[in-house]
Length: 68
Image (cartoon, rainbow, N blue to C red; front, side):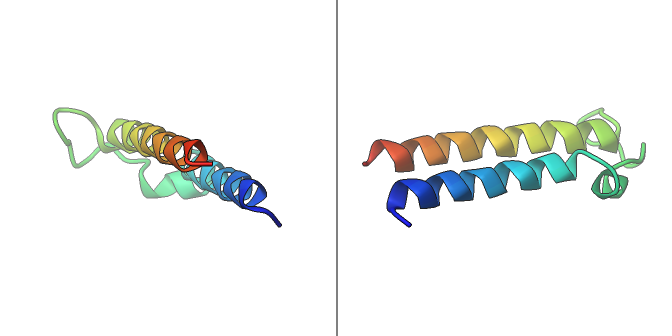
């Protein structure tokens, strides 16, 4: 397996992990109203945090892929 395929596979696993955090049954961890964080219910904070982590992951994979 060459480096490009490893990067693609790792990105795929990372994306699946983020997706799993946003669907049942793993969303049950964050599916509640309390506590409020920055004025948002915890469930909304959970979703926004997952989106931010996905963005950071995409940027990291972009820089890793750009080195090739």
